[in-house]
Length: 237
Image (cartoon, rainbow, N blue to C red; front, side, top):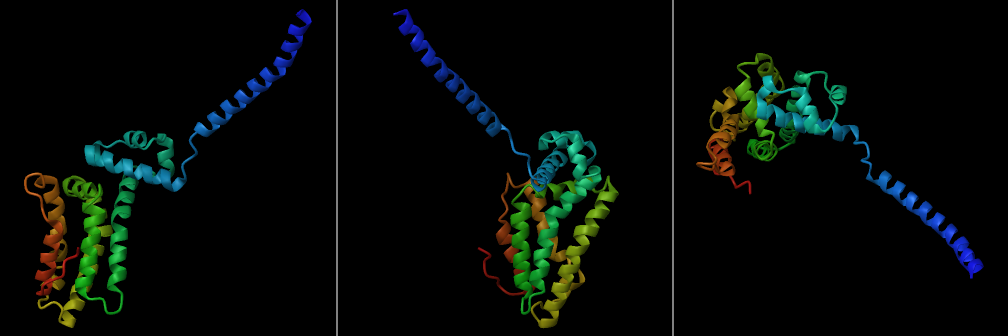
């Protein structure tokens, strides 16, 4: 009986060792699977930009700290400096990323043969509504409006990178429309600020009065195109 019990124990030991080895291997695999893969550089950079937009909007440009941006992005402060040398460079990258694609698409549309001004404006307004007013990027515009007077360098940068480029494009569109007879007045060619004014008003209205009196932005922009062209416009929807 004793010999039989020893024989059974001897057979059980290898299985126990194999089970232990398998369990250890499974645990190792689980640990490896649980480790987060390093984020690609582009994704990490975008995470920093998204965090910066939130921090700038909540605290203002002056009070915003890069430590807070890094913490919100889930990266070390040293990692942030690999992408942006200082707070000003981070802010400038935010502006370029938010507006440049919109201006680029509108410019490409304006350069298409046979493209009418009404079509360019419809595209430009739709892009602004979707990519700015419809996202947290509108916070950046509000930040410029509120902080620009206290930080002239930021205002100058925004004017150079965004405002002047947008006005140049709108002036060209308006001049071509006047020359072709699509616009009955040259007012928008002389003052292209008239074209973009409703976009700024919509952004301000959204931040201050939308809770009390929601604004029909698509309807507003359609009416604005009708004023510019002197003709009824089809609905963007």
